[in-house]
Amino acid sequence: MKALIKDILFGFVIFIVVMIMEFLMTQPFGTQDIRALPQDEYRQYVNLAFLLTAIPAGLVTYLFARWQKPDQKAGWRKAWTWMLVTFVIYVAIGIGNGNLEDILSVLGIYVLLAFMFAGPLVYVLFKSD
Image 1: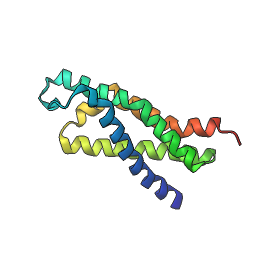
Image 2: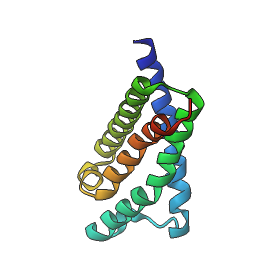
Image 3: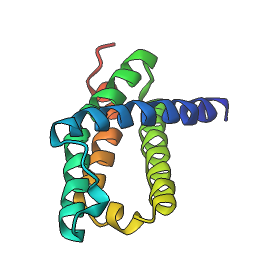
């Protein structure tokens, strides 16, 4: 139980790092008011933001796993926990901003979550003991 709580807390830290990565990855597109865009363009922008952030997010979770050096069981727990913490926070943000449908209707969020899930597993499966 103690390990799970620790993983949940690290999940929040990872989410903050991923949000910083998302901010940095979308900077080249400007700081226009994206909510003023037509629905289709807005969803394309949201999708692009998630897709551009997927690889850095996977790298972040890989590096956190490398830092913590989990065994296989702990690696799976971290993968599920970190991905679910991120998903729940994105759902909460979507509900708060009134754009949950926009977030969940694009492929990018699922690619991002898959890369986050894969980070700890890649470490566990390819680490040299």
